[in-house]
Length: 129
Image 1 (cartoon, rainbow, N blue to C red):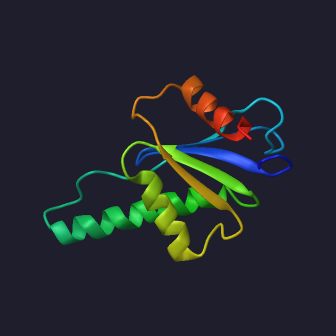
Image 2: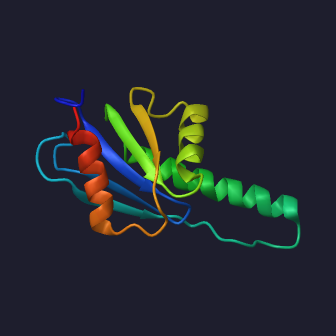
């Protein structure tokens, strides 16, 4: 299924995204974390709940936009992480019309997953045929 396709894994939460692939974005070769993107999302912004929600939403969208720009020209993107971040990312790119040529595959993962566990999860996902 993934043979001869350009693939990458994306571990994401609201603080950081890690793109996991290899040099040519194929299923051949060793997977490694090739890019780490930190968010600028902060918890509290002021006294108004509405202002806080709007600012948080804007920062989250800026983070997702930056991440999506790093994932262009891929056939399959395996998105995983804790909580709702992976679903929010998929909803954002769908709403904005980004990564339309990519198949987005979602999965969950524990919040405290090691670097090596992230890589293994992506490798195992794309090595299955």
